Amino acid sequence: MASTMTIVCALMVVGQLAGYGAGAFIGMTWGRQSAQRLLPSQVVDLLLQNGVTHLRIFSTQEDILRAFAGSNIDLTITIFDPLLPDFNDARSWFQLKAHFIVPANVSTVIVGGDYVFDKPLWFIDRAMKTLRDAQAAFNEFGYGARMKANFIHNSGELTNRTRPSDVEFRPCIVERMIQHLQFLRENDAPFMLDLFPIDDARRCGLDLSFGFADNASNVIVRDRNGAVYKNVVEWEYDCFVWALRKLNFSDIRILISQVGWPTDGCVGATAHNAERFYRYLLPLVASNRGTPMRPGVAISVYVHALTDEPKMSYNNPWMRHWGIYTSNGQPKYKIDLSGKGRDIYPSTVRGIMRMPDRWCVFSGDKSDMGKVEKQVKKACTIGDCTTLSPGASCSHLTVDNNISYAFNVFFQSHFQDERSCDFEGLGYVSDDDPSTDHCVFPVEVVKGQQLINFI
Image (cartoon, rainbow, N blue to C red; front, side, top):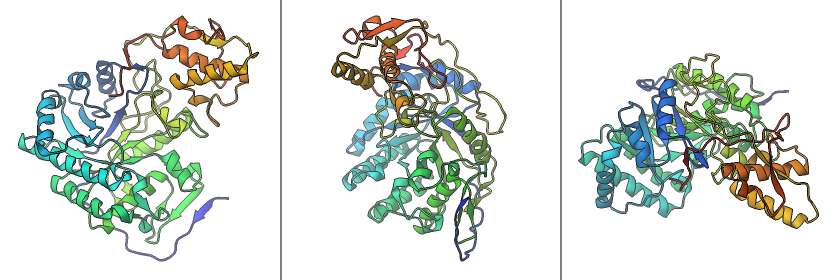
Protein backbone atom coordinates (compact mmCIF):
# COMPACT_ATOMS: atom_id res chain seq x y z
CA MET A 1 0.00 0.00 0.00
CA ALA A 2 1.36 3.39 -0.93
CA SER A 3 2.30 5.59 2.03
CA THR A 4 0.73 9.01 1.66
CA MET A 5 1.31 12.26 3.54
CA THR A 6 -2.06 13.94 3.16
CA ILE A 7 -2.27 17.66 3.72
CA VAL A 8 -5.46 19.68 4.01
CA CYS A 9 -6.11 23.42 3.53
CA ALA A 10 -5.23 25.41 0.45
CA LEU A 11 -3.11 28.41 -0.40
CA MET A 12 -2.51 30.12 -3.70
CA VAL A 13 0.09 28.50 -5.95
CA VAL A 14 3.00 30.82 -6.53
CA GLY A 15 3.16 31.88 -10.19
CA GLN A 16 6.03 31.54 -12.58
CA LEU A 17 9.10 33.66 -11.93
CA ALA A 18 10.25 35.28 -15.15
CA GLY A 19 13.75 34.64 -16.44
CA TYR A 20 14.68 31.52 -14.45
CA GLY A 21 14.90 29.24 -17.48
CA ALA A 22 17.42 31.39 -19.34
CA GLY A 23 20.77 29.68 -19.89
CA ALA A 24 19.87 26.44 -18.09
CA PHE A 25 22.42 23.62 -18.54
CA ILE A 26 23.39 20.08 -17.56
CA GLY A 27 26.97 20.11 -16.28
CA MET A 28 29.27 17.63 -14.60
CA THR A 29 31.40 17.41 -11.44
CA TRP A 30 34.88 15.92 -11.40
CA GLY A 31 36.59 14.88 -8.19
CA ARG A 32 40.14 13.49 -8.16
CA GLN A 33 40.48 11.58 -4.88
CA SER A 34 41.60 8.33 -6.45
CA ALA A 35 44.90 6.52 -6.97
CA GLN A 36 44.51 6.77 -10.75
CA ARG A 37 43.17 9.99 -12.20
CA LEU A 38 42.15 10.98 -15.69
CA LEU A 39 44.41 13.51 -17.33
CA PRO A 40 42.82 16.96 -17.56
CA SER A 41 43.19 16.83 -21.36
CA GLN A 42 41.24 13.54 -21.41
CA VAL A 43 38.44 15.16 -19.41
CA VAL A 44 38.28 18.14 -21.75
CA ASP A 45 37.99 15.77 -24.71
CA LEU A 46 35.36 13.64 -22.96
CA LEU A 47 33.18 16.61 -22.03
CA LEU A 48 33.35 18.03 -25.55
CA GLN A 49 32.41 14.62 -27.02
CA ASN A 50 29.33 14.56 -24.78
CA GLY A 51 28.35 18.18 -25.34
CA VAL A 52 28.88 19.13 -21.68
CA THR A 53 29.61 22.84 -21.36
CA HIS A 54 29.92 23.25 -17.57
CA LEU A 55 32.25 21.50 -15.11
CA ARG A 56 32.61 21.81 -11.34
CA ILE A 57 36.01 20.84 -9.93
CA PHE A 58 37.15 20.85 -6.33
CA SER A 59 40.50 22.60 -6.67
CA THR A 60 42.38 25.47 -8.30
CA GLN A 61 45.12 23.20 -9.62
CA GLU A 62 46.97 24.95 -12.42
CA ASP A 63 47.42 21.99 -14.77
CA ILE A 64 43.63 21.54 -14.80
CA LEU A 65 42.97 25.23 -15.45
CA ARG A 66 45.59 25.26 -18.19
CA ALA A 67 43.98 22.26 -19.93
CA PHE A 68 40.59 24.00 -20.04
CA ALA A 69 41.90 27.28 -21.45
CA GLY A 70 40.22 27.93 -24.78
CA SER A 71 37.82 24.98 -24.46
CA ASN A 72 34.70 27.14 -23.93
CA ILE A 73 33.84 24.90 -21.00
CA ASP A 74 32.62 26.97 -18.06
CA LEU A 75 34.42 26.10 -14.80
CA THR A 76 33.38 26.28 -11.16
CA ILE A 77 36.45 25.95 -8.91
CA THR A 78 36.93 25.69 -5.14
CA ILE A 79 39.00 27.33 -2.40
CA PHE A 80 38.70 24.66 0.30
CA ASP A 81 39.64 26.85 3.23
CA PRO A 82 38.55 30.46 3.84
CA LEU A 83 42.25 31.21 4.13
CA LEU A 84 42.18 34.82 2.95
CA PRO A 85 41.88 36.93 6.11
CA ASP A 86 41.59 40.31 4.41
CA PHE A 87 41.02 41.98 1.09
CA ASN A 88 44.72 42.37 0.33
CA ASP A 89 45.21 38.60 0.57
CA ALA A 90 42.17 37.98 -1.64
CA ARG A 91 43.56 40.47 -4.13
CA SER A 92 46.99 38.80 -4.08
CA TRP A 93 45.45 35.35 -4.47
CA PHE A 94 43.51 36.46 -7.53
CA GLN A 95 46.57 38.17 -9.07
CA LEU A 96 48.51 34.91 -8.60
CA LYS A 97 45.79 32.72 -10.11
CA ALA A 98 44.35 35.08 -12.75
CA HIS A 99 46.87 33.95 -15.38
CA PHE A 100 45.25 30.48 -15.22
CA ILE A 101 41.69 31.30 -14.12
CA VAL A 102 40.81 33.89 -16.75
CA PRO A 103 41.63 31.89 -19.92
CA ALA A 104 40.03 28.79 -18.36
CA ASN A 105 36.70 30.66 -18.32
CA VAL A 106 36.09 30.31 -14.58
CA SER A 107 32.67 31.69 -13.68
CA THR A 108 32.33 30.64 -10.04
CA VAL A 109 34.77 30.35 -7.13
CA ILE A 110 33.41 28.31 -4.23
CA VAL A 111 34.74 29.47 -0.85
CA GLY A 112 35.13 27.26 2.21
CA GLY A 113 34.63 23.85 0.65
CA ASP A 114 31.39 22.03 1.38
CA TYR A 115 28.56 23.43 3.46
CA VAL A 116 29.83 26.51 5.26
CA PHE A 117 26.49 26.90 7.06
CA ASP A 118 26.92 23.50 8.72
CA LYS A 119 30.04 24.83 10.46
CA PRO A 120 30.38 26.83 13.72
CA LEU A 121 29.29 30.47 13.59
CA TRP A 122 32.88 31.76 13.79
CA PHE A 123 33.73 29.74 10.67
CA ILE A 124 30.68 31.09 8.84
CA ASP A 125 31.73 34.65 9.71
CA ARG A 126 35.26 34.08 8.48
CA ALA A 127 34.06 32.44 5.28
CA MET A 128 31.58 35.25 4.60
CA LYS A 129 34.35 37.82 4.93
CA THR A 130 36.48 35.83 2.49
CA LEU A 131 33.50 35.63 0.14
CA ARG A 132 33.04 39.40 0.14
CA ASP A 133 36.77 40.06 -0.23
CA ALA A 134 37.11 37.60 -3.10
CA GLN A 135 34.21 39.18 -4.98
CA ALA A 136 35.66 42.65 -4.36
CA ALA A 137 38.95 41.46 -5.89
CA PHE A 138 37.16 40.08 -8.95
CA ASN A 139 35.29 43.38 -9.32
CA GLU A 140 38.44 45.48 -8.98
CA PHE A 141 40.16 43.62 -11.81
CA GLY A 142 37.13 43.88 -14.06
CA TYR A 143 35.85 40.30 -13.89
CA GLY A 144 33.00 40.76 -11.42
CA ALA A 145 30.26 40.57 -14.06
CA ARG A 146 31.51 37.16 -15.20
CA MET A 147 33.05 35.68 -12.04
CA LYS A 148 31.14 35.12 -8.78
CA ALA A 149 32.29 34.00 -5.35
CA ASN A 150 29.78 31.68 -3.70
CA PHE A 151 28.99 29.00 -1.11
CA ILE A 152 27.46 25.52 -1.48
CA HIS A 153 24.33 24.64 0.51
CA ASN A 154 22.61 21.42 1.57
CA SER A 155 19.52 20.18 3.37
CA GLY A 156 21.24 20.32 6.77
CA GLU A 157 20.47 24.04 6.78
CA LEU A 158 16.71 23.40 6.99
CA THR A 159 14.17 22.51 9.69
CA ASN A 160 10.65 21.04 9.50
CA ARG A 161 11.34 19.01 6.36
CA THR A 162 7.92 17.47 5.85
CA ARG A 163 5.77 19.64 3.60
CA PRO A 164 7.84 22.20 1.67
CA SER A 165 5.65 25.06 2.94
CA ASP A 166 6.62 24.16 6.53
CA VAL A 167 10.34 24.42 5.86
CA GLU A 168 12.56 27.19 7.23
CA PHE A 169 16.27 27.80 7.64
CA ARG A 170 17.59 26.78 11.05
CA PRO A 171 17.06 29.68 13.49
CA CYS A 172 20.73 29.81 14.53
CA ILE A 173 21.87 30.63 10.96
CA VAL A 174 19.03 32.92 9.84
CA GLU A 175 20.84 36.19 10.56
CA ARG A 176 23.92 35.13 8.60
CA MET A 177 21.84 33.53 5.87
CA ILE A 178 20.09 36.85 5.27
CA GLN A 179 23.47 38.54 4.90
CA HIS A 180 24.57 35.87 2.43
CA LEU A 181 21.37 36.10 0.39
CA GLN A 182 21.74 39.86 0.22
CA PHE A 183 25.25 39.29 -1.13
CA LEU A 184 23.87 36.93 -3.81
CA ARG A 185 21.21 39.44 -4.77
CA GLU A 186 23.71 42.30 -5.04
CA ASN A 187 26.01 40.22 -7.24
CA ASP A 188 23.32 38.47 -9.32
CA ALA A 189 24.62 35.08 -8.17
CA PRO A 190 22.59 31.86 -7.69
CA PHE A 191 21.88 29.91 -4.53
CA MET A 192 23.96 26.74 -5.12
CA LEU A 193 22.42 23.56 -3.74
CA ASP A 194 23.75 19.99 -3.46
CA LEU A 195 21.12 17.23 -3.50
CA PHE A 196 21.63 13.56 -2.58
CA PRO A 197 18.29 11.83 -3.32
CA ILE A 198 19.25 8.38 -2.04
CA ASP A 199 20.32 9.91 1.28
CA ASP A 200 17.60 12.55 1.57
CA ALA A 201 14.81 10.02 1.08
CA ARG A 202 16.22 7.80 3.82
CA ARG A 203 16.92 10.63 6.26
CA CYS A 204 13.32 11.78 5.99
CA GLY A 205 11.95 8.28 6.52
CA LEU A 206 10.65 8.07 2.95
CA ASP A 207 10.61 5.06 0.65
CA LEU A 208 13.60 4.84 -1.72
CA SER A 209 11.19 5.03 -4.67
CA PHE A 210 10.73 8.71 -3.80
CA GLY A 211 14.26 9.29 -5.09
CA PHE A 212 13.24 8.73 -8.73
CA ALA A 213 11.46 11.22 -10.99
CA ASP A 214 9.47 8.61 -12.94
CA ASN A 215 6.21 9.23 -11.00
CA ALA A 216 6.20 5.61 -9.83
CA SER A 217 6.85 6.49 -6.18
CA ASN A 218 5.10 4.76 -3.29
CA VAL A 219 5.22 8.12 -1.52
CA ILE A 220 3.12 11.17 -2.31
CA VAL A 221 3.63 14.43 -0.41
CA ARG A 222 0.66 16.80 -0.62
CA ASP A 223 1.32 20.36 0.48
CA ARG A 224 -1.33 22.69 1.88
CA ASN A 225 -1.24 24.86 -1.26
CA GLY A 226 -2.32 21.93 -3.43
CA ALA A 227 1.19 21.10 -4.64
CA VAL A 228 1.86 17.37 -5.09
CA TYR A 229 5.35 15.84 -4.89
CA LYS A 230 6.24 12.38 -6.20
CA ASN A 231 10.03 12.65 -6.19
CA VAL A 232 12.66 13.92 -3.81
CA VAL A 233 14.34 16.39 -6.21
CA GLU A 234 11.23 18.53 -6.80
CA TRP A 235 10.31 18.22 -3.13
CA GLU A 236 13.78 19.25 -1.90
CA TYR A 237 14.05 22.05 -4.45
CA ASP A 238 10.75 23.54 -3.31
CA CYS A 239 11.75 23.18 0.33
CA PHE A 240 14.48 25.69 -0.43
CA VAL A 241 12.12 27.84 -2.52
CA TRP A 242 9.89 28.16 0.54
CA ALA A 243 12.83 28.79 2.90
CA LEU A 244 14.07 31.60 0.63
CA ARG A 245 10.56 32.99 0.30
CA LYS A 246 10.13 33.25 4.07
CA LEU A 247 13.23 35.45 4.25
CA ASN A 248 11.91 37.61 1.37
CA PHE A 249 14.42 36.35 -1.19
CA SER A 250 12.10 34.71 -3.72
CA ASP A 251 14.01 36.45 -6.51
CA ILE A 252 17.16 34.39 -5.89
CA ARG A 253 17.54 31.65 -8.50
CA ILE A 254 18.53 28.14 -7.42
CA LEU A 255 21.22 26.10 -9.17
CA ILE A 256 21.65 22.41 -8.32
CA SER A 257 25.42 22.26 -7.92
CA GLN A 258 25.57 18.50 -7.38
CA VAL A 259 23.06 15.70 -7.84
CA GLY A 260 23.56 12.01 -8.51
CA TRP A 261 22.90 8.39 -7.69
CA PRO A 262 25.67 6.05 -6.43
CA THR A 263 26.34 2.69 -8.06
CA ASP A 264 27.66 0.75 -5.06
CA GLY A 265 28.17 0.85 -1.30
CA CYS A 266 24.63 0.29 0.05
CA VAL A 267 21.20 -1.15 -0.70
CA GLY A 268 19.75 0.61 -3.76
CA ALA A 269 23.12 1.89 -4.98
CA THR A 270 23.38 0.15 -8.35
CA ALA A 271 24.14 1.07 -11.96
CA HIS A 272 20.57 0.05 -12.84
CA ASN A 273 19.10 2.52 -10.36
CA ALA A 274 21.53 5.27 -11.41
CA GLU A 275 20.41 4.82 -15.02
CA ARG A 276 16.77 4.98 -13.95
CA PHE A 277 17.44 8.10 -11.88
CA TYR A 278 19.02 10.08 -14.72
CA ARG A 279 16.67 8.75 -17.42
CA TYR A 280 13.84 10.69 -15.81
CA LEU A 281 15.63 13.46 -13.93
CA LEU A 282 17.64 15.05 -16.76
CA PRO A 283 14.68 15.48 -19.16
CA LEU A 284 12.69 16.91 -16.24
CA VAL A 285 15.24 19.58 -15.37
CA ALA A 286 15.79 20.51 -19.03
CA SER A 287 12.12 20.61 -19.96
CA ASN A 288 11.17 24.01 -18.55
CA ARG A 289 8.47 22.21 -16.58
CA GLY A 290 9.94 23.43 -13.32
CA THR A 291 8.51 22.55 -9.91
CA PRO A 292 5.16 23.27 -8.27
CA MET A 293 6.58 26.40 -6.61
CA ARG A 294 8.47 27.56 -9.71
CA PRO A 295 6.53 26.23 -12.70
CA GLY A 296 7.90 26.81 -16.17
CA VAL A 297 11.43 27.19 -14.87
CA ALA A 298 14.28 25.14 -16.36
CA ILE A 299 16.70 23.95 -13.68
CA SER A 300 20.46 23.85 -14.19
CA VAL A 301 22.22 20.85 -12.62
CA TYR A 302 25.69 19.42 -12.24
CA VAL A 303 25.64 15.62 -12.58
CA HIS A 304 27.75 14.06 -9.82
CA ALA A 305 30.19 12.69 -10.84
CA LEU A 306 32.49 11.88 -13.72
CA THR A 307 34.37 9.07 -11.93
CA ASP A 308 34.43 7.27 -8.58
CA GLU A 309 36.72 8.55 -5.81
CA PRO A 310 38.04 5.50 -3.91
CA LYS A 311 40.46 7.61 -1.84
CA MET A 312 37.74 9.87 -0.46
CA SER A 313 37.14 9.85 3.28
CA TYR A 314 33.47 9.12 3.83
CA ASN A 315 30.58 9.03 6.27
CA ASN A 316 28.76 6.45 4.12
CA PRO A 317 30.43 3.85 1.84
CA TRP A 318 28.41 4.88 -1.21
CA MET A 319 30.04 8.33 -1.20
CA ARG A 320 32.98 6.85 -3.12
CA HIS A 321 30.80 5.49 -5.94
CA TRP A 322 29.14 8.41 -7.73
CA GLY A 323 30.98 8.00 -11.03
CA ILE A 324 29.18 7.50 -14.33
CA TYR A 325 32.47 6.08 -15.70
CA THR A 326 34.69 3.22 -14.52
CA SER A 327 38.42 3.79 -14.04
CA ASN A 328 39.09 2.46 -17.58
CA GLY A 329 36.93 5.19 -19.11
CA GLN A 330 33.92 3.02 -19.94
CA PRO A 331 30.42 4.22 -18.96
CA LYS A 332 28.70 2.20 -16.24
CA TYR A 333 25.22 2.74 -17.67
CA LYS A 334 23.20 4.66 -20.24
CA ILE A 335 22.79 8.38 -19.66
CA ASP A 336 21.89 11.15 -22.11
CA LEU A 337 23.72 14.24 -20.91
CA SER A 338 21.82 16.43 -23.36
CA GLY A 339 18.63 15.98 -21.32
CA LYS A 340 16.73 14.69 -24.34
CA GLY A 341 16.09 11.31 -22.75
CA ARG A 342 17.69 9.23 -25.49
CA ASP A 343 18.55 5.59 -24.75
CA ILE A 344 22.30 5.99 -25.26
CA TYR A 345 25.65 5.46 -23.60
CA PRO A 346 27.87 8.52 -23.23
CA SER A 347 31.11 8.69 -25.20
CA THR A 348 34.03 6.73 -23.77
CA VAL A 349 37.35 8.11 -22.54
CA ARG A 350 40.12 7.85 -25.13
CA GLY A 351 43.67 6.71 -24.52
CA ILE A 352 43.22 4.50 -21.44
CA MET A 353 44.66 0.99 -21.28
CA ARG A 354 43.80 -1.73 -18.79
CA MET A 355 46.62 -3.44 -16.90
CA PRO A 356 47.12 -7.21 -17.32
CA ASP A 357 44.50 -9.55 -15.92
CA ARG A 358 46.23 -10.25 -12.63
CA TRP A 359 44.77 -10.30 -9.14
CA CYS A 360 46.18 -10.58 -5.63
CA VAL A 361 44.36 -13.31 -3.68
CA PHE A 362 44.45 -14.87 -0.21
CA SER A 363 46.51 -18.04 0.23
CA GLY A 364 43.88 -19.55 2.51
CA ASP A 365 46.22 -19.77 5.52
CA LYS A 366 44.03 -18.95 8.56
CA SER A 367 46.31 -20.44 11.19
CA ASP A 368 46.92 -16.97 12.63
CA MET A 369 43.70 -14.98 12.26
CA GLY A 370 45.17 -12.07 14.17
CA LYS A 371 47.74 -11.66 11.41
CA VAL A 372 45.06 -12.05 8.73
CA GLU A 373 42.87 -9.37 10.31
CA LYS A 374 45.85 -7.02 10.63
CA GLN A 375 46.67 -7.43 6.93
CA VAL A 376 43.04 -6.96 5.84
CA LYS A 377 42.87 -3.75 7.89
CA LYS A 378 46.09 -2.56 6.24
CA ALA A 379 44.68 -3.37 2.78
CA CYS A 380 41.40 -1.56 3.38
CA THR A 381 43.10 1.48 4.86
CA ILE A 382 44.74 2.11 1.47
CA GLY A 383 42.48 0.23 -0.93
CA ASP A 384 38.74 0.81 -1.37
CA CYS A 385 36.79 -1.94 0.43
CA THR A 386 33.46 -0.09 0.48
CA THR A 387 31.94 -2.59 -1.97
CA LEU A 388 32.10 -5.11 0.90
CA SER A 389 29.70 -2.96 2.98
CA PRO A 390 26.24 -4.30 3.90
CA GLY A 391 23.97 -4.14 0.87
CA ALA A 392 26.83 -3.39 -1.53
CA SER A 393 27.72 -5.51 -4.57
CA CYS A 394 30.35 -7.64 -2.78
CA SER A 395 28.62 -7.95 0.60
CA HIS A 396 27.84 -11.68 0.24
CA LEU A 397 31.33 -13.09 -0.36
CA THR A 398 32.80 -15.96 1.62
CA VAL A 399 35.35 -15.15 4.32
CA ASP A 400 38.24 -16.18 2.04
CA ASN A 401 36.90 -14.11 -0.85
CA ASN A 402 36.45 -11.11 1.43
CA ILE A 403 40.11 -11.32 2.33
CA SER A 404 41.08 -11.75 -1.33
CA TYR A 405 39.01 -8.73 -2.31
CA ALA A 406 40.76 -6.57 0.29
CA PHE A 407 44.19 -7.79 -0.79
CA ASN A 408 43.37 -7.19 -4.45
CA VAL A 409 42.18 -3.58 -4.10
CA PHE A 410 45.43 -2.82 -2.26
CA PHE A 411 47.43 -4.57 -5.00
CA GLN A 412 45.59 -2.73 -7.78
CA SER A 413 45.99 0.64 -6.02
CA HIS A 414 49.75 0.00 -6.23
CA PHE A 415 49.41 -0.73 -9.96
CA GLN A 416 50.09 -4.45 -9.57
CA ASP A 417 53.48 -4.08 -7.95
CA GLU A 418 54.06 -7.69 -6.82
CA ARG A 419 55.68 -6.48 -3.59
CA SER A 420 52.27 -5.11 -2.57
CA CYS A 421 50.77 -8.63 -2.68
CA ASP A 422 52.92 -10.19 0.03
CA PHE A 423 50.86 -9.46 3.17
CA GLU A 424 53.38 -11.34 5.34
CA GLY A 425 53.12 -14.39 3.09
CA LEU A 426 49.32 -14.45 3.03
CA GLY A 427 48.84 -13.23 -0.55
CA TYR A 428 49.93 -14.30 -4.00
CA VAL A 429 49.42 -13.06 -7.58
CA SER A 430 47.04 -15.08 -9.74
CA ASP A 431 45.84 -14.84 -13.35
CA ASP A 432 42.56 -16.62 -12.47
CA ASP A 433 39.78 -14.08 -12.10
CA PRO A 434 38.27 -14.44 -8.58
CA SER A 435 35.18 -12.37 -9.51
CA THR A 436 31.73 -13.80 -8.79
CA ASP A 437 28.42 -13.29 -10.58
CA HIS A 438 27.65 -10.22 -8.47
CA CYS A 439 31.09 -9.00 -7.41
CA VAL A 440 33.79 -7.79 -9.80
CA PHE A 441 37.36 -7.92 -8.50
CA PRO A 442 38.84 -4.80 -10.14
CA VAL A 443 41.88 -4.52 -12.39
CA GLU A 444 43.56 -1.11 -12.46
CA VAL A 445 44.39 0.80 -15.63
CA VAL A 446 47.89 1.64 -16.85
CA LYS A 447 49.49 4.48 -14.94
CA GLY A 448 48.50 7.95 -16.04
CA GLN A 449 48.28 10.75 -13.50
CA GLN A 450 48.55 9.37 -9.99
CA LEU A 451 47.40 10.85 -6.72
CA ILE A 452 50.06 12.96 -5.04
CA ASN A 453 47.81 15.04 -2.82
CA PHE A 454 44.14 15.86 -2.59
CA ILE A 455 44.04 19.15 -4.48
